[in-house]
Amino acid sequence: MKRSPKNVQMSFSGEKLTHFGGVYLIQEFFKKINLRSLLTQYIRFPQRNNRYSTAEEMLALIYPIFLGIGRIEATHLLKQNGVFQYLTGLPSYPNPTTLRRFLLRMAPLALPKLRRLHDRLLAIMIAKPQLPTKIIFDLDSTVLTLYGKQEMACIGYNPSKRGRPSYHPLLCFNGISKDFWHGELRPGDSHTSTGTVELLKDSFSKIPPPVKRIVVRADKGVYDHKTIEYLERRKAFFAIVAKITKPIKRKIGSLSYKKYSFGIETSEFMYQPRGWEKEYRFVVIRRPIPEDPTEQISLFAMGKYSYQVIVTNMRLSSLNTWRFYNGRASVELIIKELKGDYPLAKVPTKHFAANEAYFHILLFSYNLINWFKRLCLPKEFQNMTLNTLRTKLLLIPGELVRTNNKPVLKLPSNFMYKDAFEYALKNIKNLQL
Image (cartoon, rainbow, N blue to C red; front, side, top):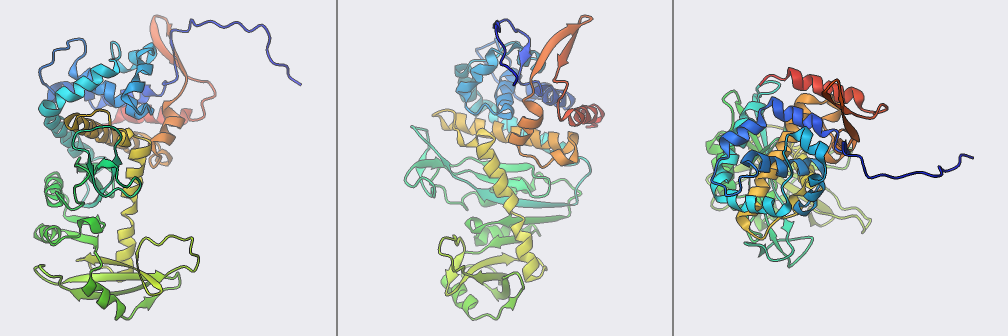
């Protein structure tokens, strides 16, 4: 039996060590897209603190998001990590108070500039590896439960923490590339459909000219005649879950249904809701309610069936319309990842403007990682969550040494994902923007 070591001496003298060795990959990607220069160019506003530039403070907020340091208070860990600062080009690391003050100062002056920079990079990256001819917009909202006293925190719909104040952001993602497209942070008492048309207008304004087909998928929160009429004017296709009103209840109970072997039944009808400009096609999906009472039914239940109704102007069959709509589940997974792997659920300050600024910095960071995965990593890495990506590529022990007066980052010799790391470096080098 192997014995444990004896007489081990310990010394706190390692000055060139880091467990963020994989951040070198991210930094090389940032250099390739000229992120620091773009931040300097776009985000300009008067600052009293001359110790850190605007670009350095922006990067000091972005890097912790990638590395899983959820709260701003915990970023002090990077202040002691000289190798991290060397790899990222930061002269030192700001303390949490400095970062909060930066958010509060930049919110009214520089947030619109950050959004313009985000849109510019989005326009470039959507064309990689090739320009699309079709875009699917997936809309969804989520609830961010708040603790403490935050500005514009309101009590609204909050299924997990009833009665607690919250924010209620509305988000739009590209269902094909998974890119964040547009979004707004709103008070918790905002109805889901509030601002939907404005969000769609902003989303449509970013669509590149080659795109000829636009499809919108959304749940019943945005079911509204104003939304439908706007999409019709833009000649866009849509598949939106309908609210089951009394007239719709009467219709779905009198329809004949087509049965499929996997337990789904479908039907459809034409209907013009009150206040709408014309009638539309409504697709109905029903399935038997399970006998097991422990199984949760989230759809509308009537009799022995649960129902879902989708309003659409697409020409797909009823079954394929339902299957196509189910692709919207990916946006729910993205929001779950934003709350778990990104600190979307961790509101950093008591000021709404500063929180809104951080909200957009976080979504900008999400897109940076999404572009990095799509353009630089092997195919088997591209669908990984940020948490998995951290485990495999970013959180790697490293040692910075000098050989022949040149800096060398030493990574583990038995590193399991060495091939993926080198593949990413090669793709970054060959990336054309």
